[in-house]
Every structure is written in structure tokens, then in C-alpha cells.
Image 1 (tube, one colour):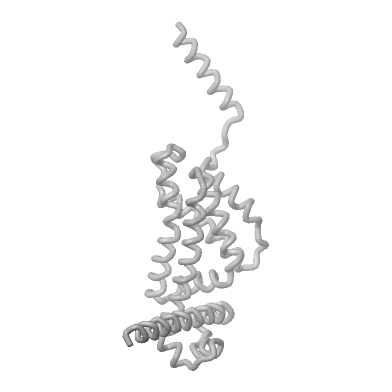
Image 2 (image 1 turned 90 degrees about the vertical axis):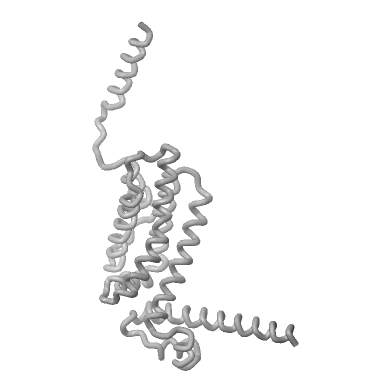
Length: 227
């Protein structure tokens, strides 16, 4: 009897997990097409083929369901980002991968990203806090790369990991707004190259004769050593 009870419990748990995933997937589609404010629990329930009470049994409110949709999205992209970065060598290469991957994610999920961006900037403090926490965990991958780069000597000790993170994701957020506004999409490869170069080498115009001056100084130093 104990074995049967255990199996029954396992089946129930798996069924619940499956139902939750169905509801979350349906809610994601409804939120994308209707926006958070216009979306209703009734629409979500109807798309799953259940009654409203069933949805509310799993998620106490529409807000809780929206938070879960955002959470799952961030978990997906965070896992993909961390996995990809771990397989790459060099801080510059890792940073370029992060930028390129993030822009690609915006392209592939622009509708959902628009909903998240709009709702997180609204008046709902709870959702704003949740999104901020999810985003901080996701964007920490840049901070970790900068810290690794500082340890390896690729990145200057004076560089601020938090500031570099803000530059990366701040620039890409502006790109997202252009995307939402219907501006022509730029090539992800080109943006990744340009933003990576900007962060690594700055915007100061390098004099054309700087290499010659350095070589001249090295030559003078060598003569002094030989004396």
C-alpha cells in the first residue's frame, strides 16, 4: 500500500507541474498579445481549456502569474548566458558574446521584452522590485566577466564592473526602445563588435604617430641601457 501511495503522489505532483507550465505558457502568449492591463484570467484559462478558478488555484492573482512568466523568462536566458560564457576564453570574447546573445534575445523575444519593460516602469512597486532582482542576477554575468578580466590583466584595475554592466545593458535598452518604436533593426554582429570595441578601447582618438613615438622612446631607453 505504501508503494501505491508514493506512486500516486508522484503522478499528482507531475500533473501539477505540467498544469502550471501550461498556464504559464498560455499567460505568456496572452500578455504578449494583449498587454498586462488588458489581459484577463478568463482569457488565459480559456486558452488552457480550464475555468478561471483553476488558474487562480495555481496563481493567486494575475500579478503573481505575470511575475512567474517574467521569472521563467529570466531563468531561461540566464542559464543560456552563463552556459555560453563558461565555454569562451578571454574577457573581451566573453563580453562580445554577452552583447551579441542579449541583442539576439531581444530580437527573438521583443514582444515579451516590451511588456516586461512597460510593466516594470509602471506604478506597481512589487513587480518593479521583482524585475529588478531578476535583471540584477542576469546582468551579474557581465560583472563576473569584468572581475575575471581584471584578475587576468585584460582589464584595468581601475575599471568598475558595475559601471561597465550599466553601460552594456543601458546601451542595449536604448536599442530595445528603438526596436519597439519600429526603427530598422541593425545587425547584431555589428552592434556587438562596436559596443565591445567602445568598452574595451574607449572613444579617445588615437594619434596616428603614437606608435612611432613609442618606438622612439623604446629606442632611447635601449641606448641608455647599452651605455
